[in-house]
Image (cartoon, rainbow, N blue to C red; front, side):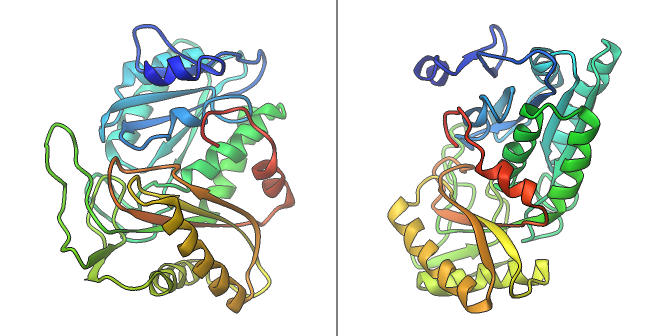
Length: 313
């Protein structure tokens, strides 16, 4: 309600539901929705607006939204051309979005979806079968939102989604755990001088703990894992997203960005697009994630650069 109040020039809350929708839907345009547990703000409500999402569904903290809420968001977003759902790879999310899709199709609304699994840290973790969906999801919202605004069909958006998702990889680290309000204590505890590589956005475990290192060493660890995942080669073009987890000052994010920049320069990767800030957080977790997207098509870059009217992009 507070978000809808402050940003009522752009969005509103759908009455009776935990859904934030854009004020101006466009007839004949494919609707684009996303959602997930709360606690990751500004994701996903911050990306509702012209050029990005039509609506976002907020579940309880770190809990998937229910099928009835998702169904209502599909109806809100449907402008006669079908609705596309961006789903992060968590078992609860997948199950509930699929159920909502079936309910919507029974009501005659055409629905398609993509599952984002950009986190390369661990293959299976709490909540997931396979890789988790994390901050790279924001690039998916942006590129598909541009395609919808350009008048692309549901089938064309599905095809585009299936091409971009495998080209997005993310890895994160934490300096402290997140405190879920109902639980009242952090999901995990790190010593004062300890960090954990590869944590998830719900505080799921990562792949290694070690004592705190200077930013340059952290950057080397995360970029190294990403280079491996991409089999990156000099001359390739990438989009870069440095994402704060909620309690890491922007100053520290920029220090990290400077180290990432010099590493990318040393290996000869071209950064065609870059973004930094808190986009998909984990309540009060201190830490950050690093996302790289391989730009295989000029149209993807054009989509990232296109202006939008949202709260948080």
